[in-house]
Length: 124
Image: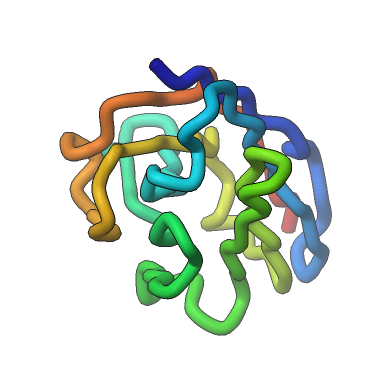
């Protein structure tokens, strides 16, 4: 069982930066692939970024490549999403997710555990 708690969301102007954090409970964090997803009002949940258990593999959706960076600190059971050059279309609730696999999935149905989400609002 893994519990996830996101933090770091907020209101930022276009072009600004935010760093999201996701703190995980449990002793086996280093065996989980972690993902960040987002959901805007009226839209489906969308894959943003993912990272394999030992950080060997990362994956990003095309719209955030070069602007967002995912990383993790297994010693502190935390995964991060650094978001730079934010755009109004990045506005959404951002969710952290975990799956006990060594593959980075972009399909949200593959993930077993979810946080409660944190709101990111980018004003233009």
